[in-house]
Image (cartoon, rainbow, N blue to C red; front, side):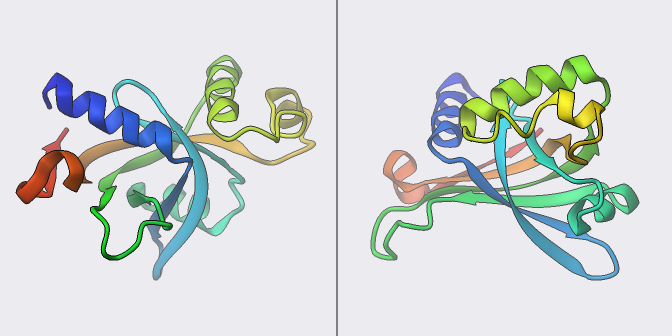
Length: 154
């Protein structure tokens, strides 16, 4: 992925805050979660290990995600992404604290509830999860023109 594509992808990811996460247990499942990301395009979300999607991840860590702006009209040029990757629970309270700061910046409003102190004291069951992408299909019709999208194997 060249620098221009990385910059475009980063700008797009910053412009959104929700992703649809697909997992596979006995049957496919989707969940909508708030996310943040790092410079390697790893995605991070917060959820309870008791949720269906996190239970699925424990059994099968292969996931798919999509991030899109649902307010774009059908007639407008599209931007969005689809990806495949693997998911895992983040280990370590220091790492979780660092990632929660990033997550709160991307999805503010839950700082007093979703924090490491409440996780450690079992006030909440939520944990931070990481998605490591292996494949990204990035739609950006305004930038890519007739090509419409680019694919990246990571």
